[in-house]
Length: 217
Image (cartoon, rainbow, N blue to C red):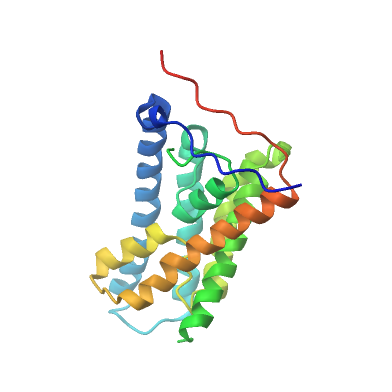
């Protein structure tokens, strides 16, 4: 089946109450996730007097991010879909699930981030977006949190396993360590990974039409 046309929506959807509520819900959820994820790293640094990275520290980061994402997705899933990640949003946009209105080398790190983001967004599609998900919908926050924790355990020592542009920007603002070429790896690779899932899942597995938001009275 051919990939469906991307739905750009209508101009009035920007000011629709549902769109505004979804935006606020995503902002709050993303804030909670970034605060807990970045804060866990700062807390660990304080407890270890800025000591070297350790396997224990990696475990702490993975668990903190998994728990925080579980909460963030759970509290916003019924309002905005619980994306909490621009890469997830882009993947859903490419797959037409909502409208537009609503120590390794550079390339190794780039590919690594794409692969990890692919796994994350694919999990989101399978458990939270696909209309055929059935009872999987109830496990979506747990599954999404677990895949993030697993990605951090696998990729944390190599790339930091951001897999989320919002989290990458949050880390930059907290540390004020702006090295643009390095951060472009995380920002662009995460978005590319999300977009790839949008195309792949839509082409192979999805069978659903897009419904516009109701027109405000």
